[in-house]
Amino acid sequence: MNRIAPALALLALAAPLSGCGGDGGGTAGGDTTTITVLAAASLTETFTALADRFEADHPGVKVRLAFDSSATLAQQAVDGAPADVLATADTATMDSARDAVDGDPAVFATNTLVLVTPPDDPAGISRFDDLESSDVTWVACVPTAPCGRVAAALLEDNGVAAEPASLEVDVKSVLAKVTSDEADAGLVYATDAVAAGDRVRTLEIPRAGAEATTYPIATLRHSEQADLARAFVDLVTSPEGQQVLDDAGFGQP
Image (cartoon, rainbow, N blue to C red):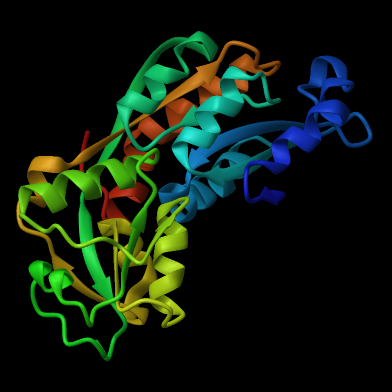
């Protein structure tokens, strides 16, 4: 299965894909059809699993996944990047791409932020407000990303005024800083902490539930494979798709 990350690579794909005609820009020898799904970075594990199931149920169809910050993906959709489905980590970002969206987006999951540290917790972090310590190096998402907006809200809610050591483009980049011991802590989604397993130690953030983020998914107007795009959305919102999301730690819509 073809996986593309980051999604900026889609821009380079625009020329060859647009020239493949009615098979959605992804044929190989005339017998394979490709659909492209733009998805928030926090959906990497679940959408990879769902893409595998979709391909198994649709012989001759390949799902190309492009993961990145929701804001980047939404802008690419608006700019007409060759894609069929868009899934973002908040409704505000989806709203910014409404000119590119076909019909009403479907909400399919929720998520909350947690604080993660390396397993040995070298900075001795036991509470969220330990981020105020000058000895703690922590990271979060850029404000334009949904994870960054939620992080900013939780920092304000909890009276934490300290500044992060860096702002990362998406939640996977935040997680990578922690798992590579480049940061003492990071603000990531609960599902990313689940996916990281024993590579991180997880602490709940006070009032995180009040700042939960909601995930919408939609087909794109310029999709050349509208039926397959709708079928992928149907899989994500189906009981089977919801079970995959639930197993990964996502909340119900």
